[in-house]
Image: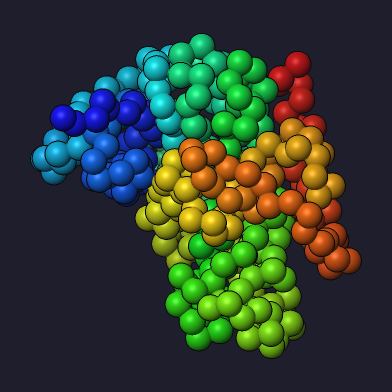
Length: 327
Ligand SMILES: NC(=O)c1ccc[n+]([C@@H]2O[C@H](COP(=O)([O-])OP(=O)(O)OC[C@H]3O[C@@H](n4cnc5c(N)ncnc54)[C@H](O)[C@@H]3O)[C@@H](O)[C@H]2O)c1
Ligand SMILES: O=C(O)C[C@H](O)C(=O)O
């Protein structure tokens, strides 16, 4: 007897991230290899023809777990009774644009979609915001969806986490799976803080294994921080496959658990680590039983404090910049 299908909304369905994301959801990479899904796809009216093309391709994959597809330009229809949502749809950054340029372009979208989630989604729906500026878009959605549990609206810093993991693993000469306890704090932006102070590799302390604090501070942190820009410069458009992969990692761990390992999720702050309550900020969490809990009590030394303060200041500025929209 097959399980009842989960209903999963995905916005920006005609876009490049979704072109990588949708087939992986449909083949069970997020919700499980025995879990049917109905995809509820949202995009703008002018993009619906392209979405139909994506739908034809999904049909042609004959995925056994794909139990149905809804295509719409109406957020409430897309979010009706959903169990999970990937909010990808928004304008991406092009060459020469900084993330802050996206704030005004995309803030309104997340107000409208937050309200629609509030009205139509299941009360325990898990929401992941990918569209940039992801943290502040998620903050807007939390403020616009007061009837959903605050902690169920999250944003993606998993791409930064995976980028740091890959660079650190290469430097330490270990596989990425060997590394645990890496943290991405703050905003998904060049101010994010990739913190390897607690990280281990095969049980050894990673900073000791690498033994090069200068490389960590002057190469690793800026490389991860500027990776999105480097990809835009090289590809001519922003990261897509790696962004979709990170979205899958984020939601899969949230749903199925992280086996005691630390993962980085941007979640509404509870005020800990000096991050003002409510800001959606990257933090270390452990996922289990369909929810996540923050890793608490970590020491924040002088360097970490200065890095955290910088990224939190940016999040605070972004929050203040959208205050009028939410009034
Ligand atoms: N958080 C991250 O780590 C991360 C990584 C990569 C990209 N991104 C962001 O993800 C977003 C999508 O990137 P992409 O490369 O897929 O862009 P894209 O331009 O290829 O696709 C965006 C899609 O969103 C649709 N869209 C726009 N406004 C919409 C709305 N109001 N409702 C529904 N759909 C809407 C567009 O029509 C388009 O189909 C961008 O904001 C990008 O910056 C985030
Ligand atoms: O940097 C961008 O604008 C795209 C994305 O957020 C990324 O990190 O690749």
